[in-house]
Image (tube, rainbow, N blue to C red):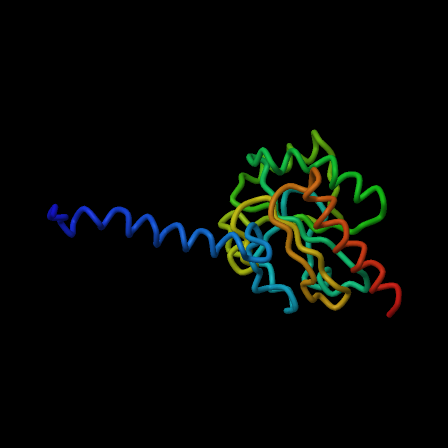
Length: 183
């Protein structure tokens, strides 16, 4: 009989354990979604300053009497540029969008909005990204839907484009808008 060294069995055992872990991970309800700790809570304060001569954000904007959208963005961010036409369209349809520019240069952000259009009713400037950390933002763009009382209803990670936007963001926005009309 051949003597099998225990060390030879280690790679197949490790492979088998990893395969089981990955198989269990595939069975999660939505493996691509990162749960947000903000949903259902009041939106945190924003540590901000004005951005150029643009309309400045005020904390009372989060408690305004209607549904609003808070969009974290940066001028250097390609996905933010990809979603910009959708933000302009939403603003043209009357949705109030508060923009939070973070980890950016004020001049670059202001020039970007001057050149490509400003979809925001108010703009906050967060050069160090402190507010982004408080909101749990991992990378731009991220968009939050807020209720009239400032409660976070939904968090969307990534650009507002494509089928993911249509299948995940739009239904949540429509539900929030319908819910605000019935109250």
